[in-house]
Length: 225
Image (cartoon, rainbow, N blue to C red; front, side, top):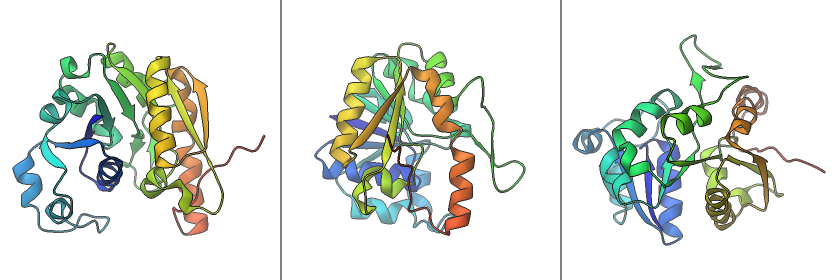
């Protein structure tokens, strides 16, 4: 597929690299490609400058959010949750119409320090906000309950774990489920419509505390039944 990954952080890069490995055409979207490539310092998490990563992945295109989304069949929202609606608006509603939008962002609020809280929860979710803002898009929430490496290489864990999908469009969920299988996921649980994204987004407070307790993000949830 022609794919667009919106976001140049570690999650976006990891998803983009794996999509390219699987043979998909990949464009990464950013606000200002020149500014993104001009950065020479690692970010706050120690992630290498984007230009260094781009040099190692010459088959992946860097362009604007709108440029990436325009020709894509699948759009991956790998942005900071606080910026997701703004970024998707920059991508252009007309470029999202009819497209599968895989939303892997979380509504994390860092305004009061660590650990973050959620800026939407209980009666709404970021996935639902995106679907309401872009009603012609086919939004599927998935992969937001694990770290970037496990999103695309779940076999790094010693046993199979679970991944969830939420969305209103059955065909869009079929596309995403196929991609999840290509990534290596074996236990894929369809939770239902996009409102079920409330549940997976609200797993993040538990996930963050598990990271603190275990001292590593290399873990995932497994639903035993």
